[in-house]
Amino acid sequence: MPTENLNTAKILIVDDESPNVRLLERMLEISGFTDVRGITDSRQALPTFLEYAPDIVLIDLNMPHLSGFEVMQQLKTAVSPEEYLPILVLTADVSIATRRRALAGGAKDFVSKPIDHTEVVLRIKNLVETRFLHLGMQRQNSDLEVQVRERTAKLETALAELRATQDHIVKQERLRALGLMAGGIAHDFNNALTMMLGYGELLLPWLQKHGAAREQAYLDHIISAAQDATHVVSRLREFYRPAENHEIRISVNLNEVVTQAVSLTAPKWKGKCLADGIQIDIQTNLLEIPNIAANAAELREVFTNLIFNAVDAMPTGGTITINTAPMGDGVALTVTDTGTGMTESERKRCLEPFFTTKGERGTGLGLAVVYGIIQRHTGTIEIASERGLGTTFAIHFPSTTATAQIAGPPHDWSRRPLRILIVDDQEIICELISEHLTADGHTTAAAKDGHEALELFAKSPFDLVLTDQSMPGMNGIQLSNAIKASVPGTPVVLLTGFGDELLNHATSENPLDVDLVLCKPVSQADLRRAIYQATEKVHPLASVA
Ligand code: ADP
Ligand code: MG
Image (cartoon, rainbow, N blue to C red; front, side, top):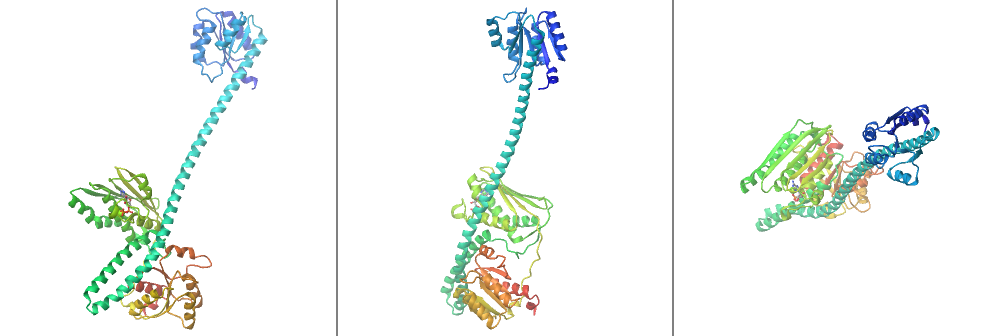
């Protein structure tokens, strides 16, 4: 430590004899010390110490009123244990007993009277130097502490963010895995349902014609059960289906969608009020928001599901509040109820397909569908819930650009006859589709796999190809690519139960070059629309001919 720093040390002298004080002051001044204060009344030692805050105290031991020992005792109470305050005792009594007592009382060093000028200055410098080193260290320590605190805070924030991201990823992965599983189940069911509905529909007119009323009633039951099952499967599909490239999005005002959903669901919440004598109110606070590119029907489904759930959660009545507001370029929405709320584990799992706490009454598909729809609109959903207080679903849709709406087929369009090649490894599906198409006046040929299809195609090209995706040997996309390579512009419609699988198969060497993807089971109307859209896309004028 440089000496000029030592010279600025504040020195307090306590000695009842004024000449001693003067002498010391003079001595220290000559040695370069610039800040010295002396007092002769030892009772003033503590107040002066507190006010002056010296770096070192020089004390005489024998003083009237308060002895040096007593003054040291007082100072001890005023100095924190971490602080190093040097006390230098000036005494004529240098007996061992006195020294011990002084050291025990807090003294750091001694100078015997009469004082030797050089000695006292050297001792003071030593002690002050030690004090200054101490202070420096303390400053460094507290700087370090601040740094450590700041770093700890940063680490804690990073850790919290990491945890949140991890939770989010785990949730997403879980839902993705469930989606894949649901997709697999939906695929198998679709094939079975395709058969039931397809052949059922074909059989119905025959029964009607032959007046077999009882059989017709049986068949009606079979068909309506299969239709119900199709509904469940298609709901499941809504959950796991990834967004398709050519998904139709139009410019939608979410406020209108909310208003429609509120009135569409009115029978349920108003009806419940009347039936159970309870009161359910819906309040909407709809601010001016930008339009977003969306599928309006899907979004209506989001809000009707959320409203239905809210009503279910308020068996004794309550209020549903729906807010919309602009957020960034997009829109933020909240649906809040004053219902039963969810436990933390229910909250975490409620988006999963088939998760329900409603037993027989619930399907557990509502929120899974909501989640799927929001995902496909690249939105996000957050759920906050408190048991006994209620639940808030907070949804955010980013702004996106609308794609044009594709027009449906003109009325008489289906009458235009086409030569259509049907490719499916299940012969029975080929037959079924063929039945539908020939009923519409088209001519068909069937192939059981890609190779056979290509052979048929080589003999004479077709106007359109309808192919299954999952087939042994060559899949639908590979077949489509081969056909488009041989006769460019041939429309290809892909039939699939696996939305996900498509994406996996579409690689850079194997792009997804089909004109339309249709999901099984397909109805006659689906087929008509698909054929119209695929040919329209490839030969825009052909279909109007
Ligand atoms: P379902 O309504 O058929 O049970 P959902 O997927 O719509 O299926 O909801 C799943 C579960 O999430 C419900 O069974 C319920 O436990 C919980 N849930 C959904 N919405 C709410 C809500 N607004 N308040 C409390 N719990 C809810
Ligand atoms: Mg529900």
